[in-house]
Length: 151
Image (cartoon, rainbow, N blue to C red):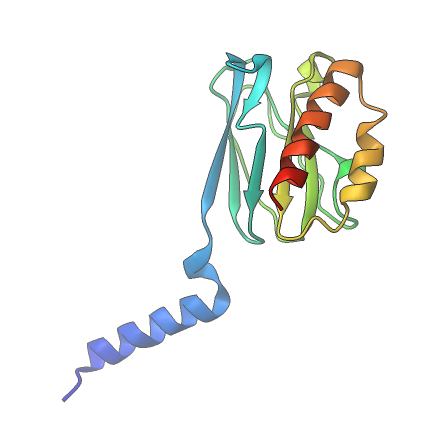
């Protein structure tokens, strides 16, 4: 005889799987003054995530913040602006490519690229990256190369 507790646990597990909650993960991106790739960086600067995954931008150094680059996000995506010197957790549900910057250090190339599901807006995001300041543009070129190298 199967206990009611086992049946209830099985129903909860099935519900989590059906809604995708069981598969959601958390991806951390550190905001740093320096790493092996250079100064003023997100680490990692390129990540792949699934729709519904949480992205946590960690303020390892308190002189950084995160802001979405709206021209480098899927149409209809909610803009992101995190406070200076604090962590920012977001959940990206729309498929596409998202560009992020540290507003005070954007000109120094402090950018990140997050691919969520299929990169449906990749071409538009690449065009938008062309108008970034030179150091940010150079980093975006490398990040898009990573995205394209291993689809």
